[in-house]
Image (tube, rainbow, N blue to C red; front, side):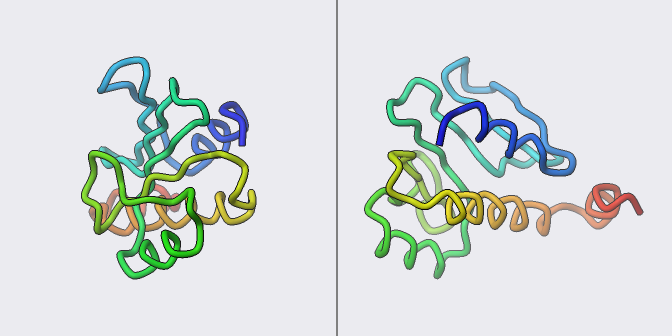
Length: 118
Protein backbone atom coordinates (compact mmCIF):
# COMPACT_ATOMS: atom_id res chain seq x y z
CA UNK A 1 0.00 0.00 0.00
CA UNK A 2 1.31 3.43 -0.91
CA UNK A 3 1.67 6.23 1.63
CA UNK A 4 -1.00 8.64 0.41
CA UNK A 5 -3.91 6.15 0.28
CA UNK A 6 -2.82 4.83 3.69
CA UNK A 7 -2.58 8.35 5.11
CA UNK A 8 -6.03 9.22 3.74
CA UNK A 9 -7.50 6.08 5.31
CA UNK A 10 -5.90 6.78 8.69
CA UNK A 11 -7.04 10.42 8.68
CA UNK A 12 -10.51 9.37 7.55
CA UNK A 13 -11.20 7.87 10.97
CA UNK A 14 -13.46 10.07 13.15
CA UNK A 15 -11.32 12.40 15.28
CA UNK A 16 -8.04 11.18 13.77
CA UNK A 17 -5.14 13.57 13.43
CA UNK A 18 -1.55 13.37 12.28
CA UNK A 19 1.37 14.45 14.47
CA UNK A 20 5.17 14.26 14.30
CA UNK A 21 6.34 14.10 17.95
CA UNK A 22 9.34 11.89 17.07
CA UNK A 23 10.55 13.95 14.12
CA UNK A 24 9.60 14.18 10.44
CA UNK A 25 10.45 10.55 9.69
CA UNK A 26 7.62 9.12 11.86
CA UNK A 27 3.98 10.07 11.30
CA UNK A 28 1.87 9.39 14.39
CA UNK A 29 -1.89 9.04 14.03
CA UNK A 30 -3.92 9.78 17.13
CA UNK A 31 -7.49 9.85 18.28
CA UNK A 32 -7.88 12.01 21.33
CA UNK A 33 -4.39 12.06 22.76
CA UNK A 34 -3.75 8.38 22.10
CA UNK A 35 -1.80 6.87 19.23
CA UNK A 36 -3.42 4.21 17.07
CA UNK A 37 -0.81 4.08 14.28
CA UNK A 38 2.78 5.08 13.68
CA UNK A 39 4.15 5.06 10.14
CA UNK A 40 7.91 5.04 9.53
CA UNK A 41 8.05 7.30 6.49
CA UNK A 42 11.70 6.72 5.56
CA UNK A 43 11.46 2.93 5.44
CA UNK A 44 11.26 1.17 2.10
CA UNK A 45 8.93 -0.60 2.20
CA UNK A 46 6.92 1.44 4.67
CA UNK A 47 6.47 0.04 8.16
CA UNK A 48 3.55 0.77 10.43
CA UNK A 49 2.95 0.03 14.12
CA UNK A 50 -0.64 -0.83 15.06
CA UNK A 51 -2.28 -1.65 18.37
CA UNK A 52 -3.75 -5.14 18.49
CA UNK A 53 -5.51 -7.52 20.86
CA UNK A 54 -2.67 -9.68 22.29
CA UNK A 55 -4.12 -13.02 21.14
CA UNK A 56 -4.93 -11.70 17.68
CA UNK A 57 -1.47 -10.13 17.47
CA UNK A 58 0.10 -13.57 17.90
CA UNK A 59 -2.19 -15.05 15.24
CA UNK A 60 -1.30 -12.34 12.74
CA UNK A 61 2.43 -12.84 13.42
CA UNK A 62 2.10 -16.57 12.80
CA UNK A 63 0.15 -16.12 9.57
CA UNK A 64 1.95 -13.15 7.98
CA UNK A 65 5.77 -12.97 7.95
CA UNK A 66 5.38 -9.19 7.40
CA UNK A 67 3.79 -8.85 10.87
CA UNK A 68 6.27 -8.80 13.75
CA UNK A 69 6.21 -7.70 17.41
CA UNK A 70 5.91 -3.92 17.71
CA UNK A 71 9.27 -2.24 17.18
CA UNK A 72 10.00 0.07 20.14
CA UNK A 73 6.51 -0.65 21.48
CA UNK A 74 4.87 -2.97 23.99
CA UNK A 75 5.29 -6.18 22.02
CA UNK A 76 2.24 -7.78 23.62
CA UNK A 77 -0.14 -5.04 22.41
CA UNK A 78 1.51 -3.70 19.24
CA UNK A 79 2.53 -5.17 15.90
CA UNK A 80 4.87 -3.78 13.29
CA UNK A 81 3.47 -4.36 9.81
CA UNK A 82 5.81 -4.16 6.83
CA UNK A 83 3.87 -2.89 3.82
CA UNK A 84 5.64 -5.11 1.31
CA UNK A 85 2.52 -6.18 -0.60
CA UNK A 86 2.24 -9.61 1.02
CA UNK A 87 -0.75 -8.70 3.19
CA UNK A 88 -4.04 -8.25 1.31
CA UNK A 89 -5.32 -4.68 1.36
CA UNK A 90 -8.57 -5.69 3.06
CA UNK A 91 -6.61 -7.39 5.87
CA UNK A 92 -4.30 -4.41 6.26
CA UNK A 93 -7.24 -2.02 6.54
CA UNK A 94 -8.88 -4.38 9.03
CA UNK A 95 -5.72 -4.17 11.16
CA UNK A 96 -5.98 -0.36 11.06
CA UNK A 97 -9.66 -0.53 11.98
CA UNK A 98 -8.93 -2.84 14.92
CA UNK A 99 -6.18 -0.57 16.21
CA UNK A 100 -8.41 2.49 16.00
CA UNK A 101 -11.30 0.68 17.71
CA UNK A 102 -9.08 -0.52 20.56
CA UNK A 103 -7.76 2.98 21.17
CA UNK A 104 -11.20 4.60 20.98
CA UNK A 105 -12.38 2.02 23.51
CA UNK A 106 -9.71 3.19 25.92
CA UNK A 107 -10.78 6.85 25.73
CA UNK A 108 -12.86 8.51 28.42
CA UNK A 109 -16.61 8.17 27.95
CA UNK A 110 -17.05 11.83 27.01
CA UNK A 111 -14.35 11.58 24.34
CA UNK A 112 -15.97 8.46 22.86
CA UNK A 113 -19.39 10.12 22.82
CA UNK A 114 -17.95 13.20 21.12
CA UNK A 115 -16.55 10.98 18.34
CA UNK A 116 -19.99 9.47 17.81
CA UNK A 117 -21.54 12.93 17.70
CA UNK A 118 -23.43 12.41 20.94
